Length: 272
Image (cartoon, rainbow, N blue to C red):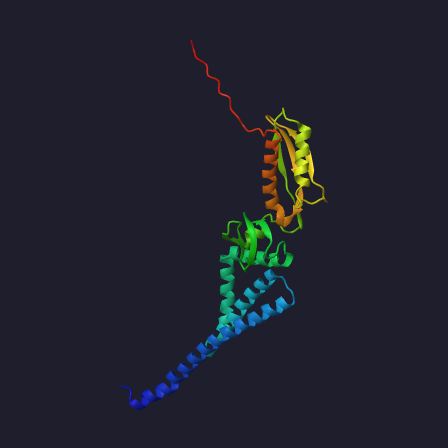
């Protein structure tokens, strides 16, 4: 049986120091997290003041946050008396094992680094990448977040983005609209061509240089097909395409020019 004096000594020797160490470890962890969060904000603010691309700022901020948090955890464990030297060695070995098991995640991380270095697109660009189309919102350590035209948030692994074909539709200031309009074989070709050209010349959003093109592209099975190619600013692409399609259809109707559509003739035969 322990006497009251023995218990008091045990409390002084073990309980009090451990309680103090645990309390200090908790304080170090809480304060360390706050300091790390503040440092990340300072780093991001400095990068913004240096006019660094927002995509790079987010990526560096994510890495800095992870590294600083790791230091905070190690400092907290060290206060508890854990041998951090051995812990770091164990973390290294565990990291190697986890790395071999999570090769896909490491590939996504490496792809994220390559996206930041070579910058095939930036935040706000409209792209086709990783099997999806939309506006780039953010690049994290492992994923690229893309907002689709119908406002869906699509999270694409960086490996799928960098490992595939990337089409940046916002990289250039101008874009060409490729359209095809068919008319009937009995319609006036010259008149149709004149209408198509006038439709583009009347729209101020269509650029004069490069000049719009109207050309007879194909004699199809049931229609004479015109290739129409106006150039516009990237921001006007869809509005001009929709408006031009409607305007040409209405103008064709007003001038008696038909737009053929697939038809099927059914002949019935009555047996004797």
